[in-house]
Length: 460
Image (tube, rainbow, N blue to C red; front, side, top):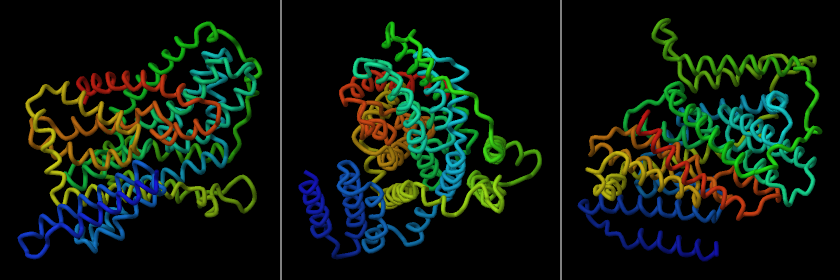
């Protein structure tokens, strides 16, 4: 199937390049329009069917955009060296330190100790732990860190095949990671991508605290709904206890405390950037703070002699592919905007121009949530956000009013393993059947549509 898709995609791509007239200056704009469509179509097709790893597809603009004349070299390099890439890089390095010194385990075990050992309470503990970590660490990294702990808990459960708790505990890791990522600008790649697109193409800056004012309440609402949904479906099993799960309280090590102090400093500087700039004249950027925190980790001494909290060899575990994916998404968005494709696509929504906001939001959010079930949420945001932003300029609605709900909704793919990396990670445990995830996820997708739309109408 992949070979057929590859052959078909490449054939159409080459056909567009050769059949598009470009013999005189009058044809030039039309040719560039179709070249941009050809490259974008090839990328979306390869992303959709994962013909090659999605990170490889994100590199296509580097070899195609300049030769075809659809991007200037300066615009292309700016996309792959965007300021938000460094925000992610700093965040990833901070998460490496948290993982290296098992800070995430301390936090997770602390929450479980607080909530108790009944199955319902353990489920709550895992949802809260995963959601909290995913606010600051990428949702992919969070799912990877939390899954082994969930599997350790499940090893204490008898008759795992008939246990609803087993299914919901695994799903709580996948869904908690995605929902927690909605809360902050660095929590999920689509959040940063949307902020970058709006800044580059429309001059709109979304800072860390501004995002959190919207994302955090919505994330807490979704986590609460997921918990009570699982609680209801567990039936009598919710009251059973797993006393073996209770861990002895471990003492925080000096390294863990040092990492937490640096991490807390970064979060405080992110959260209070606007007041510090306004009242003290201290000008800095979110990505500057992230890189500052990352650099300090390489300077700060560890507990062992002549060691540091992070060594450069630790960066081998960085998810470099996400940074490339972000750059490819930015390049794709710029390519479509610069060659008039976005303007043309925005005409698709003209029939909704005079519709009430709730109908328009419902249409957009449904497309975002169910669309990201079959394609990367990064790919969806990189194509969909510029189109909707261009459409917003023709209406009485603001760009943020339409684009922010789309981006938040892109983190609400709960049905399929391919929907988001956390879904795929949890499914790879081999303890879930696809129909279990699909049945539960479909209901939560519908609930997600309603919550995102209502929340957007009231607060965005």
